[in-house]
Amino acid sequence: MQIHYFADDAKLASRLANLTSCRAFPMEIKHFPDGESLVTTHSPVRDDVAIIHSLDRPDQKLIHLTLAADALRRAGAAAVTLVAPYLAYMRQDALFKAGQPISQRAIGRLLGSLFDRVLTVEAHLHRVKSLNEVVPSRLESRSLSAAPMIADWLRKKAANSLLLGPDQESSRWIEEIGARSGMKNTVGIKHRLSDRKVRVKIESVHGLTRAVIVDDIASSGATLAETAHALRNKGIRDLSAVIIHPIFAVGALSRIRRAGVETIVSCDTVAHPTNRIRVAPLLAAALSDQP
Ligand code: R5P
Image 1 (cartoon, rainbow, N blue to C red):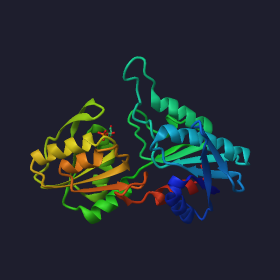
Image 2: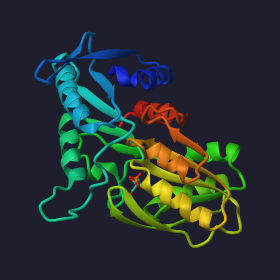
Image 3: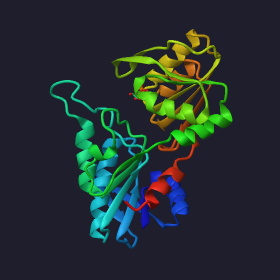
Image 4: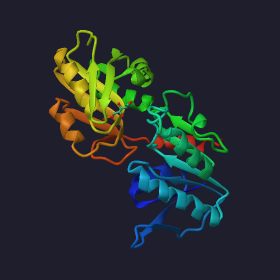
């Protein structure tokens, strides 16, 4: 197996290469004057390869991946695994309004047609049991749980805090992290009013004054900020957040900080200054598992 990567993912690619004892090779992206991209591999390509590309800024990156899959196969790859630590387009997972697509299914089908399997971390899958139902790939595609590494981090840094998920959808990882870390845990009730507006209600903070909010994605920051306000109103004084995918749209971080979240920590599925929890060991183990 060998690993191919674009410049953005160089750090993670090198960690993965070390952990799997594979070699990692950069791929080049050139932009034509009309805005089209040209992707090139300059390395000898083996039979069995992985390409690592996290799908923040997805619209551009999906084109690069489409071209990369074709380039790798033409250069000799028979099996191509996509390692996308963050998989975009998973939240639009139902027909919310007539005339819209089910983006999760459309993008899943595209990836399944390009790659032999897809490995990711905590894909936003709430209406299906496995990534394979969304990405119909030849080999088994998997969404890996970040709960064990988050629980480890919290045990060391935030014992005696309430562990809180903003909504029912977060209960899957909140319950697992709670069981592993021994922290008291609960989830809030969230209503989304618009792209940047949500309402969050918290029933009880179990008599604690410290809390850690854990969520899979922070995008506009609305969910974290409103959860923070609700917790403060319930008497929480010391507030942190752990985010699996730190997407953070413009203005999101300052909105979350203004709401009183003092410490913000993330997994390195997307490169960001808040990265503290490394996902390479998780991905390396899955990559080494022969499907
Ligand atoms: C939603 O279901 C997710 O789990 C996150 O809570 C959501 O994507 C966060 O988005 P935002 O930061 O825009 O509120």
